[in-house]
Image 1: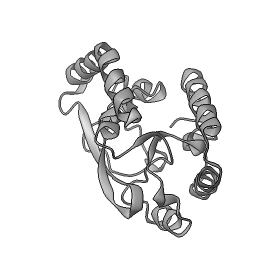
Image 2: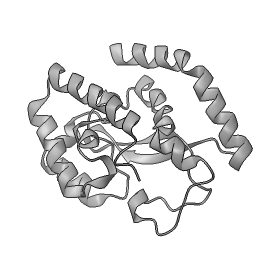
Image 3: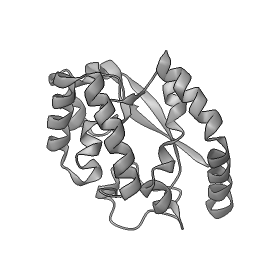
Image 4: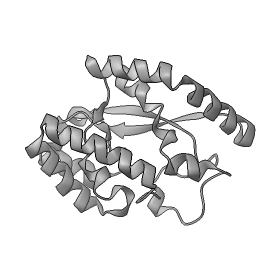
Length: 180
């Protein structure tokens, strides 16, 4: 419940940035401004995650590190590097599909990741905007490393660990490291 209240408060506070970003995307690359993508949620369910669109229209629905050419429209990669593209996930928190901290939800077609998370009971956690794997490599680590980091988070959950993840997330975002 507290997560939903904070998400709503952040939407209000960040509304100028949300509006500016929406207009920027619209004028540079047209509609849609947001995109939704099928992701694996808690308990082997699926939901649609919301993000600002940073890539050109009709970009394949695969992890960014698997794309062979530059998928970004002008400035889209910067929106991603400073994580503004993640702000619409506040809507997912409002809907109860995500939390601020937890394992990042896998793409619907990352079958190995989804299966391993199920086997290790990581899928019992609500996915998050940020998590232990994101502050320990983000897009620069392998799927198996993500699984191990998610397992660590599952076995060591605490308010102290969540605060550490939150602090390190802000440091990572400000340093613009480990992002494809």
